[in-house]
Image 1: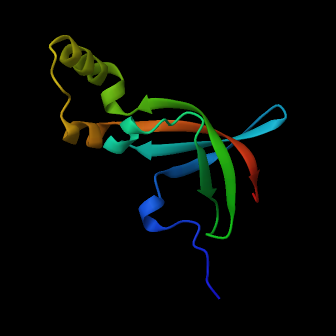
Image 2: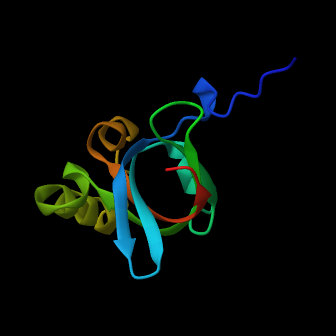
Length: 113
């Protein structure tokens, strides 16, 4: 019998932080590290499968909000980005990988929590 693997290593993109209840619907918070390929993928509205306690427990959700986070998106990092933009310089990829991440909120559609 062929066993379906829901979470292959090459498809894992982030970390589940927890659930929050909002009226009649549930939301889940995720953290995703910066990855260059995210710039080429329309993220808002995408469906995600989120692993819970084990590979047999998951929820299906849809991205409802996405925001940047990390040292490169606040304070001095934000100023660095603005200066680079004004001077038409690219922010080095290694800095993005070290100091940038994404906060993702998904609306839980179905699952076993």
